[in-house]
Length: 245
Image 1 (tube, rainbow, N blue to C red):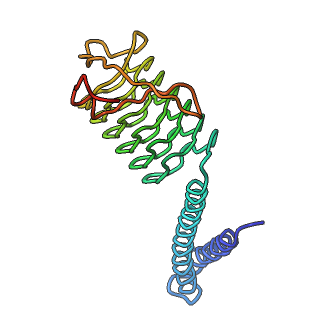
Image 2: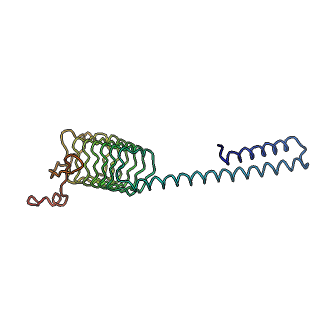
Image 3: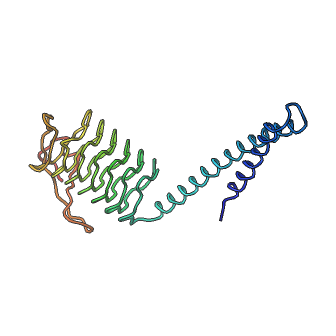
């Protein structure tokens, strides 16, 4: 079925064509000439109104679709393998969610609240995560190539085997994180805030980068997955060897 605006566009186009014909095929100053000018002018005004209405309608449709998507996301707890590539989810409140193997390529998650979410093996290539709250999130095996994590908070996050190729981590907070097997060799690490971290021989750093010291961890077992590294930030920061963990 044709949209109403398409029918209107055809009518307006026909009127403009008739008006142009009257202007060029009749004597200047005559009644038909003046009628042609009026028809052309009216057609152009109508076309402008039609275009404005079409743009407003499309914007309203996009907003309605976004609101429906946000409602769906906030109502669900298990969003594993969901496809949200290219979606605008800036500022989304989505903590403690399961997003296993989710497709989040080029998704706008700037200022999103994703703390304690499970993003294992999620595809976040090219995603926008500026200022995102990922504290305590699990991102084991996730792909963050070319993602923008500027000023994001990743405190207590599990980043084992994460690929950060060409990712922007400028000003990112990496405190008490597990970087074992992570690839940071081509990441941009200007201004990264490092706290106690853990890494191993498989962790890749940029050439010549001043690698921060390696810290020890306390291990905890979680019911919904394999052993997950968890340690008390306060005890580590105080560097109290007699602290009870």
